[in-house]
Length: 509
Image (cartoon, rainbow, N blue to C red; front, side):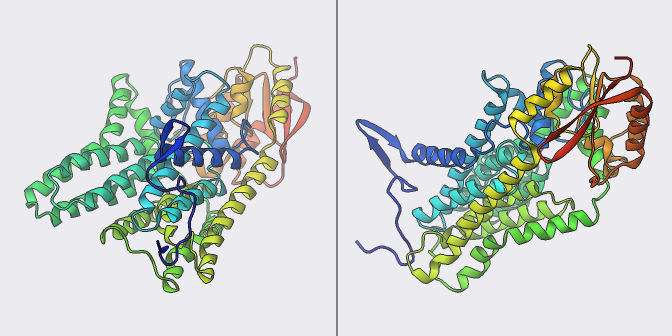
């Protein structure tokens, strides 16, 4: 049998349909591929596995979930603007016995592997099986390159959006299918649940909804039927958020929910020049994807798609994800992650090429993704510190606790959980009080809130001692320094990763 032009081969179980026999046990190729992706993802991330200070966002999500189990209600007793579904997800992780750090990280790896599996299945629509399998590997490697190794929100909602895209592709392969309305409800429910992990998927959801309506139009639906279906699909996507709001309204916290989830983001100030530098850096880091998707097809024959309309659906998904990235303007590295799923699918045809002159596009993409992922994880390990350092710092703080609260003006959210003392403010994510961009967005005056905190006389206060401060709120920083100079003494300093901290205790202790 002649091998198709441009394709190379991988072992049969790697991306090929069918079943693999291990002794007398037949294992579905789906499970084989999932465990391959999971094993590779875990091995690739070993440098950070078990580290409690991988990323401040993940630390904070876990902190909120833990405080929720202690009776604190998100948005009311501990403030953030992320959807409650994300904190609920982390609270579910806490139900699993074992080290909570490794538990959430393993769930993140499983979600990454499952997303890679869906990417593989989608890529089969436009590429050969061996190429599709490698598309999943590209995703596994690329996610850590944008600070999504374990528990960032996109690690989880990318899976839901990829499943919705998979179902949408199937819809477009079925002309005049009688169950389009039901299939659309399933797709939009996946979008709705994803929105309760991160609202930014709204743009992909709108695109998916428009493509469902376009499918109905192509099936010669009447205007009335299209309008009714569109209303049903829109309400389905909004239902999880409406349900969350209804739950808060029922207990008298509708205003807290609305302020945190929707009003605050409208008042957050842009980062200025720093954000434009991030944008340029990240778009540059995606160059191997742009070459594979936009340039490579000019130089090599692309495999024929299984269905002529599928490539357009996949491109529309990618454009919507790019729009969702661009629109917010802050452009942090993990905001790139939603683009990685559709881009990995669209890049699949350039992978596993057999013609020597055609291999470099795919090899560049694989190697760049791997090097980028390893480099960023190495930087995180260096900058944030080790588990040993973190445990030592926790003990240094605990030794000076006398039944009061611990307050960190700067620092890692994970310390609040490891120290285990009371938190003297609902703004436990330090950026909300120590940066000027958040000052008009959190619902209180940061300087007044810091003064209120310090008047409660926390047993220990942690503050950063570095000169290059990111977007500093000089007013709130001056307030905390004034209280420290008057009522506290610096009892030690500590280095966590590359960050130097000063630890202060009340003078009368």
